[in-house]
Image 1: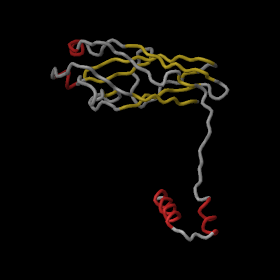
Image 2: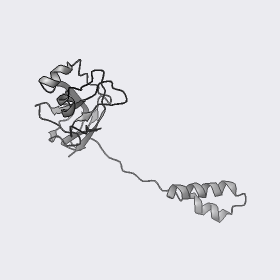
Image 3: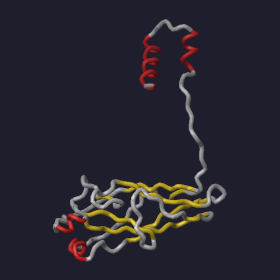
Image 4: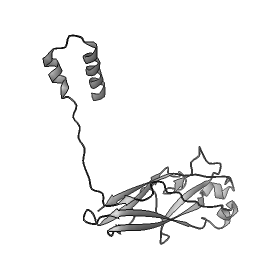
Length: 179
């Protein structure tokens, strides 16, 4: 609603040829800006992390369960512990409807279907989407956080042997919460 009011006020300002000085003074300071400056203790070295899960035999998903986990790292640089001393990580993205907590493959760009991506800690503990990891203590300088990912068949696709082979893609967002 404010946006419309501002647009109407600006439109009226430009359309009117006979604006008095008093009216100009009233409209000169009617936009206020605010924000918050923060000091984040770390920067992420790579803003675009790609995890190649390789070629996975779909038959193994039927008979042996999730694929072998593939490790990936979150490399933090320029960390300053005078600001915060710990952080937790949250992965978010489109969640699988049949496997809550697992990342859905992108149906617009993937030809494979009936699968989801599982995330894990370096100790192979499941890491559901939208849940905080345990707090990681950070040190000054560089910090490396290790995670893993695997592919799992969705229950109905496994039961009915309907996993579709093909290329798959998924996207997740990493959010760091400092303490």
